[in-house]
Figure 1 (cartoon, rainbow, N blue to C red):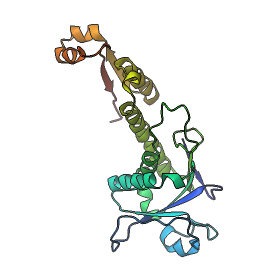
Figure 2: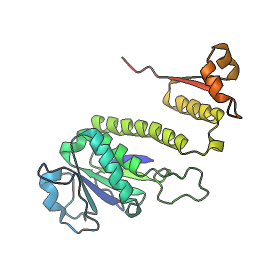
Figure 3: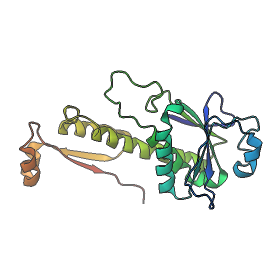
Length: 229
């Protein structure tokens, strides 16, 4: 997944994020394939954010609460998934740029597909390396930090969802331990994995009792991250 900034994105499906009107009765609204003179949106988006020659494809209005933004964007993307290719040009209203991370996480969550073990994957799957989100405008330290944060959060969420959606034969305790170790190496946090013998030595009898119903040996995983103070 590639997220970048461009002044004038080309050949990308446009998604415009606006702040919800307090008088609106619905949380968000959309319009597909509408030809709107983008100059009419200048007062909302800022004259430097959008070209007057741009054809608006989708408009989404959201609240100012980060959690609601992520949930709303994710649900909306899911319901319109067939109309979105793997390349999106994202235009965000200035007042919402403080919540760019919440918007990006919502888009990524909305594009998640339960297809990790499919032989044939969808060509527009946002988990593929060719997928792109292009943010219209110039990057700065604050916005770049939000992009990095969104990618880190979604990477962890995707790992969790992949494990939840994995069939039993693909997620034995040893498989889960391997996945967590790989994620820890990438995310630079510490992981300890106790095998059956160590679990017995530490007296974790309740875990061993549950494991008696499984043909696979148990694993006790401790992941520890110490952030900067």
